[in-house]
Image (cartoon, rainbow, N blue to C red):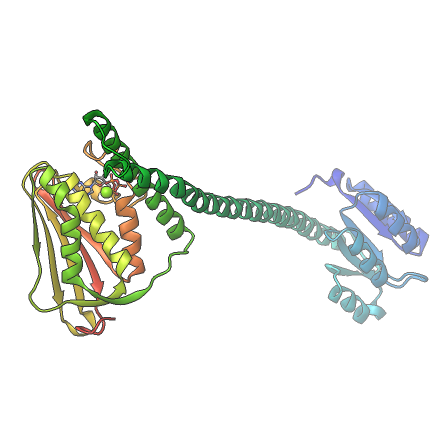
Length: 391
Ligand SMILES: Nc1ncnc2c1ncn2[C@@H]1O[C@H](COP(=O)(O)OP(=O)(O)OP(=O)(O)O)[C@@H](O)[C@H]1O
Ligand SMILES: [Mg+2]
């Protein structure tokens, strides 16, 4: 509560003597008071001064208490008003409360009657000020938040645009480099000596790696901006797994690994986006080979025909380094590599994130079972709503 001496009370009564008497009485109680015998003069004072309470007579010529109260609240919305009135005008006093007065006191009044009203009025004034400050600060915070949000949105759009444009811009010259390197490699422009052959081989393999990185970044940009377009079509899963295995065979053989494919004899057909499905299985198979020093990698296809829960499962198992339970939880975040095995120059930690997001877009999910030192099994489960006939 404010100290009484800090409180400025504006007293307005057209009967000068009464106004003066009230001012003096309140001054004796320690209040700061200023009195006027006209509403207009009181309003002028309100415009230039700082007041906590308005104590005004109701019936006054020129500007009555209600009009004064309304004009005063326009100037200071937190101002607390108390109406002073004679017995005959109680209905009007009630009307004054309806338009914003906090209370009314009946004339003639004793100090003992007015002090509790003033105390309550000051408490209300304090609450109004606090409330206004809170509303103001809430408003400021909302504005700051809105501006931070739109700045963030702008930055996000700029980043998406940059990633998409840069990836395109990078791919074009890179394709030219790869194309011409392949022409050299195929000796279409003449023979190469062994050293030149080795150099061209390095250009090709580094270029392909860079291209796959750029493609990953392009996918990341598309996924994050929600711009991936899916084109569902009937996909023969057996054929798709065999295609992945064929593409990965060289890599597996190069590491001395056995690459197996287990598929059921009956056809497994899924209506899905072929490119996305192929990319997921390629990523999983690529990881399995990359993180398996010896042993085997197996691609498995199965389907469950359980009514509405019918699903196709594609598992990629390896006998590799395995992943600890603690690391498994964060594997599917972008740019995440765990353990020491992934941190080579060839990896960015995007593969599983992209695969997980693509799996979600296809309506499925990837689950993982793994034991450190024994190997891992990543399983992609996709719903097969119209079992045997695709989604
Ligand atoms: N089959 C696996 N066995 C053991 N660890 C794995 C296996 N697959 C993934 N990991 C771990 O998960 C991490 C994330 O895999 P992810 O495919 O996202 O990235 P990456 O293979 O490192 O790079 P990128 O796929 O972008 O070239 C890897 O760095 C590796 O530590
Ligand atoms: Mg990977």
